[in-house]
Image 1 (spheres, rainbow, N blue to C red):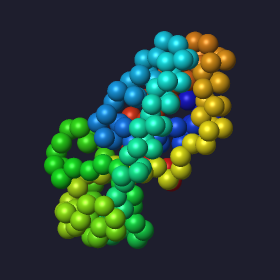
Image 2 (cartoon, rainbow, N blue to C red; image 1 turned 90 degrees about the vertical axis):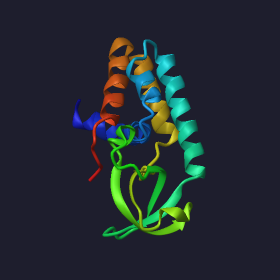
Image 3 (cartoon, one colour; image 1 turned 180 degrees about the horizontal axis):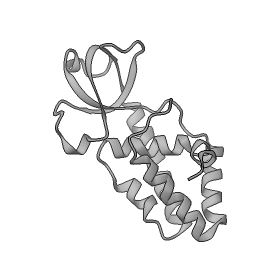
Image 4 (cartoon, rainbow, N blue to C red; image 1 turned 60 degrees about the vertical axis):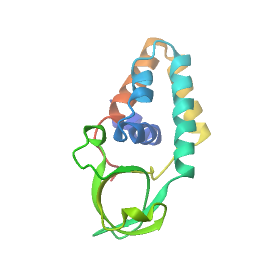
Length: 154
């Protein structure tokens, strides 16, 4: 995949990676295996709706050896839980908002993406998938697969 496309759709990749890091592969799989542009559009809509629900309940924590607070949407204390194999790991120094029981614990966590896609970016992605036929579905598949890659924006 060209660097240009990866940069163009990074926010969508970041949204889908939240679900991959939580071990909730269903939405990512729906996009990767979509047979129609409508299936991609519906799965993306469901992903955004689910993420918005998660954001309303996000916790903000301060991790040891990390300067700025981190907003997280999910976590586990079981560091070996295979469901969270793509999640980050750290020790909670302070709980700013959310579950105070996390203080002092080493956890695997799923952070809120730094940037969420605008409606314009979502529409642009769906339009490209729709207009490019088979190649559009291939684009959607590549975007979904990138969400499964343990990569962090620099």
